[in-house]
Length: 421
Image (spheres, rainbow, N blue to C red):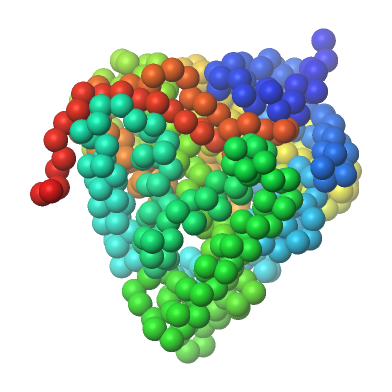
């Protein structure tokens, strides 16, 4: 029986529990690593035929062939976004070489060993501060109190954004990451909400850039606007989209991996006990397994630049291919018992940060560090923390880019703060 791809583009499908959705992908994948689908998006006036890539090898092949499957035609979303949206939210993820290589190189140059050590120190400090705020309460929404502010505070510290602006950054990034959720957009139509959020973030970050040009500091913004003699740097029109990308994509993986991860560990108490027995030593492998199972980024699109084949499938020039990372991360051709949690799994070639290729996530190192610190502190400071019910997921009108958790109530035995209050 042919797979019914209409389920894939149904927003209600993405409200189902993670395990249930992955079972559907498993059934589709048994038939083929590809799924032809049709998406109708009335509020953008588009109808799109596309191919869902749901096999691990096939996702990796598409990612490794940027000359054949590009990022810079329309968007990395399935639909082609309006020009004004791309202007705000494009940055390097919707660029191809040589523009992509140039901008990525400039940004990578700013992540010196000293900056990376400063980031590591910031991650520890921020996580400890957040847990001090909740550890005496006994019951909180994990998303609102820890998972949501944690990576954003790290990014704000990294960029030099004042803590006083956190509420603005949080509100705007919630709109961008949850554009299909009426609560996130405040009932405003998607396009207007996205443009408003982009405009507000652009204004905030432009003020910061101008200030750092005159008053450099030891932060990433200063490193990006002050190049050494002979070095290239980002132009004014390039900085704002990059910063918006960093404040959104730079927090969604960590934020949702923490939320999904806490829920997954509660469902596998024997695995949680293994990690709790060695919080530091188990962290590297355990974090990779949580990323594999949670796969916070749902998909990224590529567009065929010519008639070609991939994984035996004939593809026409202009055809859109959407790589579904969660499905690839549970491919039994690569992962033994793919639906099971194994915190000692090795090797673990998941594609939660994208598959190998020029667009592999630039912030993967930071996200891994954040997750290692978050779970080490949670397991040691709040060892009996457990969810109170299922995660409440972001609503979606169709296929979301990110599998966002909106709320996750948790409870635990209250403990004393570690600071000297």
